[in-house]
Length: 288
Image 1 (spheres, helix red, strand yellow):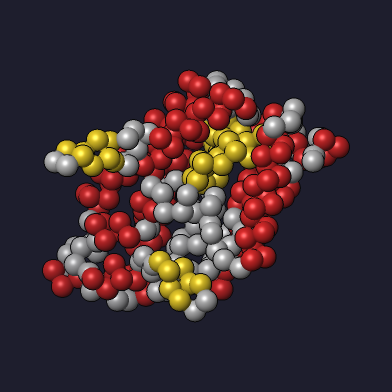
Image 2: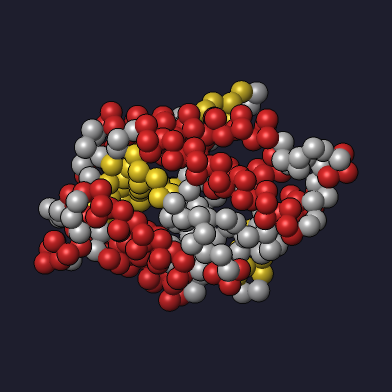
């Protein structure tokens, strides 16, 4: 991370915390739980741009986090021959923040690492086995059902904590199988996530890569659309097709600055739709 980016991110955190400590409008107050699209260490991310717009955001997000860990908790303590699960630490922090700040909006970014991260390997059939489909749909659909249950658990937990909260969640765009990972000063830090998994299953054709990614992301989004119809306080944001060019992506599963800025604008438009007013315009005189 460059010093300039480090300073920018530090400033956004400072600004957000300053706003949260004041009598800031609830329409501009947000609690966010998520993964690297909300906490990307090598670029400006969605939350950075929303804070820059004027929102006060209490963020509980970390790169690489999974939906299962966010909602249920997968961290453990080892004690010689036994282990103890530490519980849903991240979810409890999020719910405590909702109790404290009473926001109108909660943002949730989860599932990307479960769908198109390194876990994709478990959804693929080996090409040499000559399968009817390169996707093991039985395994993937079972995993998708587990993810649906987890998102529902999050929705119900938020609603129980604050009935007036609206949850906004996107379903990502189609990841790019290009073999790029986190790079810093010409050194790969993490990833790639997709190309090696396809290689291990001997799936080498680009058209197969694209078809598989499309299926996985489409199924995930359709699941979220179903929850949108089922729960009044849950709102799906469809980003599919927003970033079709390889040049718009920083690596296989992360966008460049311009992409996250665009998504922040899309989130702002959705917030405006949900609360039926543009909070940045209405409360511009109170933005600090």
